[in-house]
Length: 135
Image (tube, rainbow, N blue to C red; front, side, top):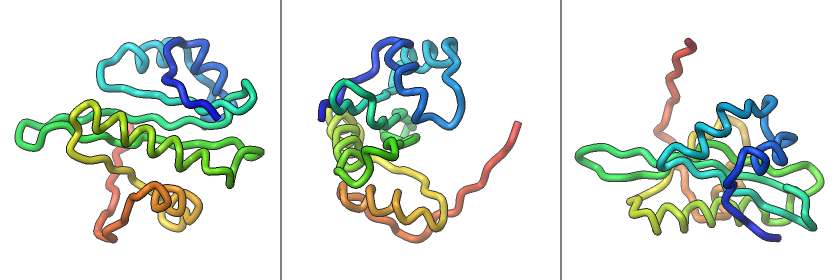
């Protein structure tokens, strides 16, 4: 397995099968060119097997923190440690960039995601509720 940072819209489009919706080139370009946005792709035998995206958030009194935005691994590549490797690589990148920590929101009952995050050293504190706004 090889993990590389996506650098072009074509890189992102090659991972489209892992996203929830079709990749919009203008959004992919904006993501890739926005400071603090990261998309790491895992390759197995030349095919995109998984991705993790992260966004650095910055606050005046806390400094920088990495938000693990999304993690996906294609069905044929699951249970091989790819998700764990992607999360560990994003965590390493966060440390390199001076982030004091990393966090992710996980849907209740998503035991597969929780297992992947825990295997990469993450821990839940059981105190989080997500509040959303739809626009």
